[in-house]
Amino acid sequence: MKKVLILEDEVSIRSFIVINLQRAGYEAIEAGTGAEALAQLQRNPDIGVAILDIMLPDIDGFEVCRTIRTTNKQIGIIMLTARTQEMDKVTGLMTGADDYVTKPFSPAELTARIDALYRRLGGENAVEQTEINQGPFLLNTRNRTLEKNGQRIKLTQVEYAIMKLFMSNPGRALSREEILSTVWGRDYDGELKIVDVNIRRLRIKIEDDTANPIYLTTVWGFGYKWGA
Ligand code: CA
Picture 1 (tube, rainbow, N blue to C red):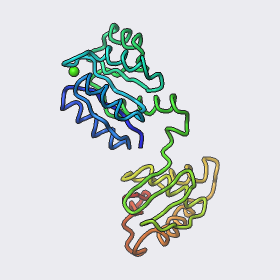
Picture 2: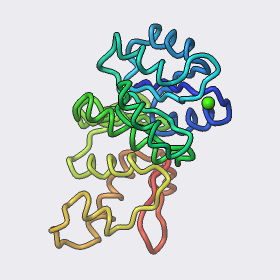
Picture 3: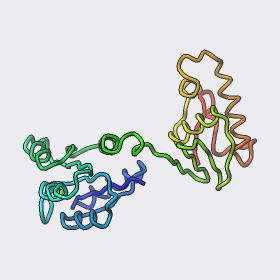
Picture 4: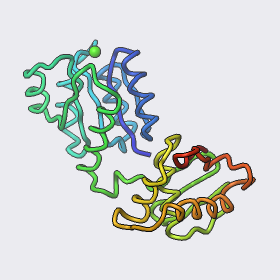
């Protein structure tokens, strides 16, 4: 799992960030002081991105950033700035930060920045999640395989593409049109019925009781929804 360090002394903000990072599939390592952050980095050399608050009880975030950079050029660093202060931005970038996010920020904004940084630092392979684990299901996007409770389920390429689409969008109702254009391509001018046929076949493979599907459910008059 991709590790992200969060250095923030305000517990409520830190917890908020941690919860949202975990939701986005990251492992969050926490620190409340600059010294703690540096210790955590020593303990976890595989941390890919560090989020650094500036105003801290011991040393300030810029100093932490500078210290990290003397030994680590690889790690991505995002500064959390309190206001839209040009000074903060400039100082942050001068001390070796890669990016900055201004408080208050939305969780989506922060995770988008982290994703982007991971992509830039590690190339596409590093950022692409190779395994999606939901309930009893494990989808491996490198091998293009699906397991349920550790048992391999044989899928056609189309079925695999449908599973990947659903497992990447858990809990979201997807319209039949969206499924058709994502899986078969935008130029495909076949009938929507092909979506239903494939879902029916998929259910036989993945559901415990095909007559009462619990994972791939129907959203009447619209499409389908995944939940595991
Ligand atoms: Ca602070």
